Image (cartoon, rainbow, N blue to C red; front, side):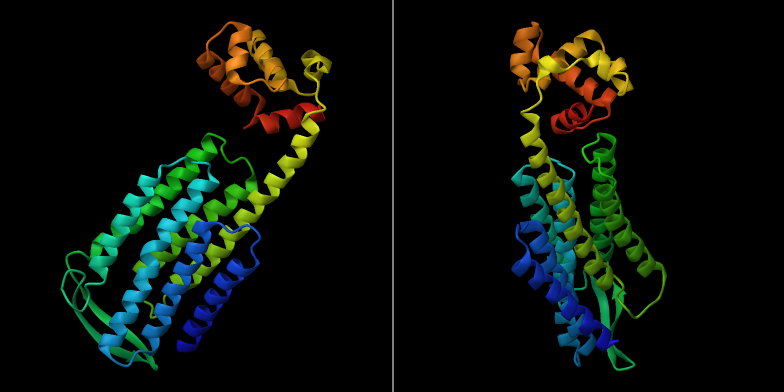
Length: 309
């Protein structure tokens, strides 16, 4: 068991170093996630080799330090991937909550808030803590449940609003969230001496690295697409002819077609409103309706569909 924890700690260290050294475009939240995973896994390893109760408790605190900030990093990554705008003060509040939770968790051995009693046990050469939970132990479970629930909600809303439209991107987000939820639930109901979350953390960070790779790939694709958009001339577009191949165009009202033609001229909402003698809010509603009827999520995707048609 000690050997396995050691391997996991080394792998998490190599993943973190590899990302920091080799990633062309570094994302702060992904870097913090890698660091948190390493801290958590080195804590698990040090706990496994501890010979005294004080050393074991200190290692356990170190593991919790990584575990407390892991869901915060994952939530921030998921919000950015789902294009959810948030204010910096929201992150500050979440960091504050994480610090409070960690303070309670770190009280183990000093106060009986988190662990009422704790003793040391050696199982096949591996150190294990036998714990009698205190009154605030469930607070950590609620903390994790709140984060997991937020992640599920954000992904569900993003899919419903088509903020994420690529199957691979959606699949990775769902896999990351469900993986950690399932592993966490398994650990609650199955008596095991091994921390399976130590493995799921590494899998999660690798999946999120893959997610960013996909996002960068599509960003590069859109940049190439943008260079082609300048060759699209709205005056050369006949929506009625295009509707023979793109049947969704037939669903547009005459006013929506007017707005669409203005969009193809790359005109902003304010200009479209002035030229069509309508309000900006009305233009916004028409644009939303156009995107919905044509099953696209952005002007870039709309232009590409027009160009291919």
